[in-house]
Image 1 (cartoon, rainbow, N blue to C red):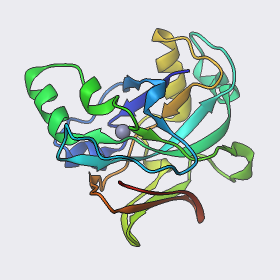
Image 2: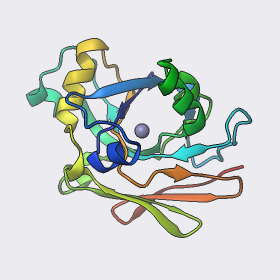
Image 3: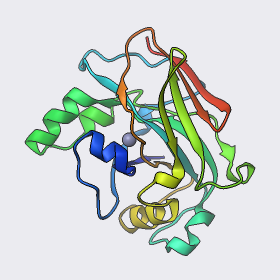
Length: 203
Ligand code: ZN
């Protein structure tokens, strides 16, 4: 399986990192070794001093697909999850300045914690979903999927032009504003609507 992560899909987040508002989606990938499941702890890596959380709605792909048309894209996922796109912001900044790829900042071990997945039909409206992150009981990030620049359908269509989607692939759909650092000892609690889906420690 593979993890496809969308960058800059919320206007306020693009602005907070001084990035232009994109005209088409952008994505990068993380390997399977980035996954952390079952709320196991994240171990702070020694190569960064500025690991940031990015809280994201994740689509769980249920079907093989290539060149998927937007109107059929909803058929390619039945479940969603909540994920964190951990980013070594200090390394990413250097990559951006030097025009290097982002993998060392985004694809490292443990950089993609993910919750259990939930049937999408449990939610009234996937394009109006509140999700949030608290660190040590303080609300640090709160988003709503209606603020996505590119919808799920557009993202699936775009990604599948370049990369065949397979069963079990994950698409992290981008983070709203409010990203920031974590430190050892923090407890991260992530919710979709009022359901706690992530609850894990930084060690
Ligand atoms: Zn992200």
